Image (tube, rainbow, N blue to C red; front, side, top):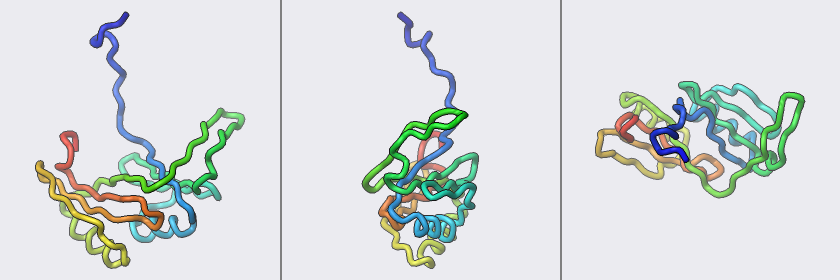
Length: 145
């Protein structure tokens, strides 16, 4: 049996992908491209991949369209799906906070909340058209950010 010190995991280098599941793909693509300005990297009927900065990818799937495994000559991607309002946060710089707040409001998106964190970070909360709770967060939110 290995002791905890012998069983240390190799390092994780960050979150590569985050997935949201939507009911109306064209509406979701417009929101993430127009309101948040995320560049589209891949677009199919079941999936749109957005460049979310800093080697991060936001995957937006048509709800229910990715439940089955996808198998091809290069391997298998297990099926997945999600329901209900999910949450994700995007990193922004502290000096971009007010500009983002103004942009969100100018696009007619209702702010759900704001938070000032003990370590100095701030967060803006709002929803995408499918009701997912999105957050724009400045450094000072977590010990590692």
